Image 1 (cartoon, rainbow, N blue to C red):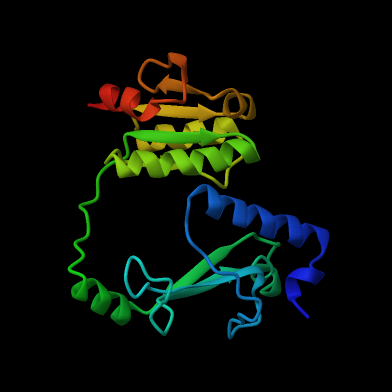
Image 2 (image 1 turned 180 degrees about the vertical axis):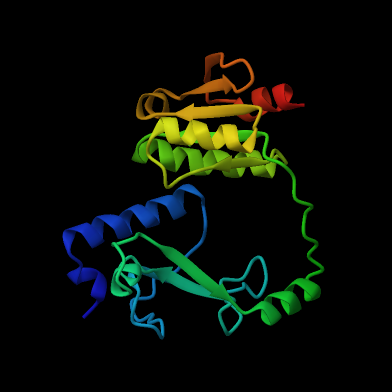
Length: 205
């Protein structure tokens, strides 16, 4: 029997959403119904990250670089309230060895210039995709995906002292638009999503 055929409705919907986000980001993945983590506090999704043997190969190197998952009940088991949580652990020595072999250099950290605020499931998926596009164009971005309130997200943007906040709601995501808010003046403007990276790049430069 495959465990994915026996999930409750909540777990089924959650798992489907995780896969949708991975597809949105074009992150390759393999579903492994036999994957078991060695600790019993995990709930819902567990994962392991492997290194490809080469760019064109579907084969992966033996031994996971990273492993982890969700553990929403763990804080409760220690006497606290139910607290949604997700984490992972990496084999640092293996990561360093792989980076040295491939001559990977870490980029220097930089202050985010743009903050993504999103409202709703559709907007969240689109925001994830756009954030990758901004990062690929060397524009540092930040977000607070766990916060649903726009007020809380704008406060976080203020704390980070970003130049612009891009606000994406369900309506904007459906209509191919995004709200650009100047965090210094408080003024905002609705722009088309198409070409938004270049439009914002001109402003932050």
